Length: 302
Image 1 (cartoon, rainbow, N blue to C red):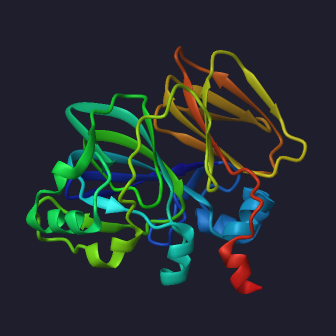
Image 2 (image 1 turned 90 degrees about the vertical axis):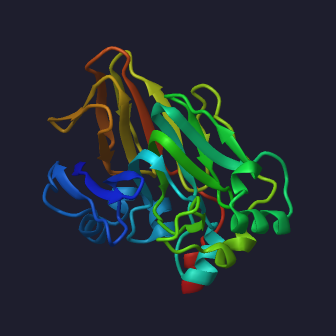
């Protein structure tokens, strides 16, 4: 299935939701045999046939990941995301782990990713109030093609950059600082105890596979046709094109992928081909691998 994007304007640029089952955003299928249905309707009807048993056990009828593009022309506010346990206990929601893929970087591109060095809670709180917090932050000049893992507790913000975000299906986050702007609500006191005062992150190396409890992302250089035959694969697959062009062939249908476009392969689809349609074709493959732990939602229901 392919889906229609939904664009929302922000003070600093735009957010383009490419695949999301969040209630306030519900992606509409535009290609495939379920064309015209929303992702939430598809999940309600087809359940684990779409996502696989592992994802269904953890997330129920909510599709477990979201994909969006952040076109940041100004500078976003400084955020922090909660982990799953905190989010469930306090807000009856999922936390958020995210991967940022740098699609393009402008001349003033900056990523703010944690602290230069460990800081005390008191000094960070004071810096947020007096406007000197930027002096404490690790500032990275990103390049196109780089990837950064945004773990719960990590402070993060972006400037003059276009990012593809692959994340757990949650938009629960807290605004800690807004660079002097006063129009938007801050959540400094509410989220203060979830901040990692030691944490920072850097670009992830090469083409390494990135595996988290919430999702796994694998980079694919598509130079020749690839055939997938999955006997008992317990996961959906999302293919996101970041450069070049590709075609996914399945059950007699062709799904064309250009940069920024994605296709969802349900767990029950076992045979398909990936074909390069241009030179330099790069794809990101998103899936959910089996988990050994029992999820918070299932414990509560039990």
